[in-house]
Length: 313
Ligand SMILES: [Zn+2]
Image 1 (cartoon, rainbow, N blue to C red):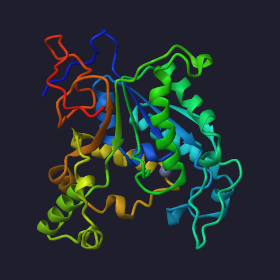
Image 2 (image 1 turned 90 degrees about the vertical axis):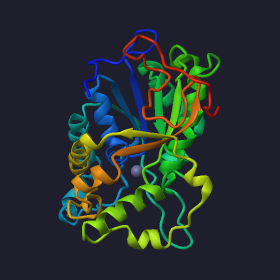
Image 3 (image 1 turned 180 degrees about the horizontal axis):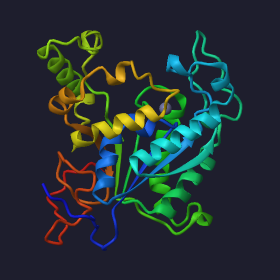
Image 4 (image 1 turned 60 degrees about the horizontal axis):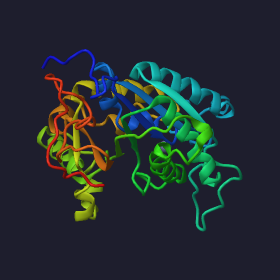
């Protein structure tokens, strides 16, 4: 399908999408194919990265060397530069320090000064400043569980939800710029049962070993989780770009590892979308949706398609 070169909102402004992520690499492992698709459609995409990923483990055996570990902060910045140019995005660092993933029983205390321990109002203020400067119509973050329970991911969720409200409130952070109302807020929903089940089925059909079999066998299905899926963004044409962006984070991604165990052709057919949950909206857009900008972007006839509001508020 032919797409217009530039998509606009009702005010005639370019569409802008802000992803808030905890670490460098999260922008490539969650929503990266839909990011690449929106960039191709002329949407401006900004990633705000909360921390420098300084306490991330090296997850690629080929990169697990003392010289890399000694310079991990610098190396991860360079990896982020490559991923940024592959995805065609803008990116800002919020400047907080990685909290690390606490392990052990009992869990050790979080390191002093880390992102998860920074005063919430301070962290929200930095994101509010980014929102008011970039003025996105749409914003994404993680759900209340962080997508997975890393303290930086949970903190990322907390500051994103708080900043969504605060950015629009002229009483909050008056020094951080003119108030801006983001129209829609989404959670990434990459790791859900229906997607894993579809990929698992397709792998078995193709006579290949499924990397999901074990996970699905012990999966506790919860109706409240399965009702989260509101929005599926077709992005199969950009899965290859996503993979390139992931590989740019060489210390974090093992090219031989599970990220790449499903052949692209199978993935494209079995589950061609990246998925989201719409959690806040100030515009009408009927659910389910296939576009993060539904209710915001004008259609070819110059109108914003709208329908009876079934949007959660
Ligand atoms: Zn992360």
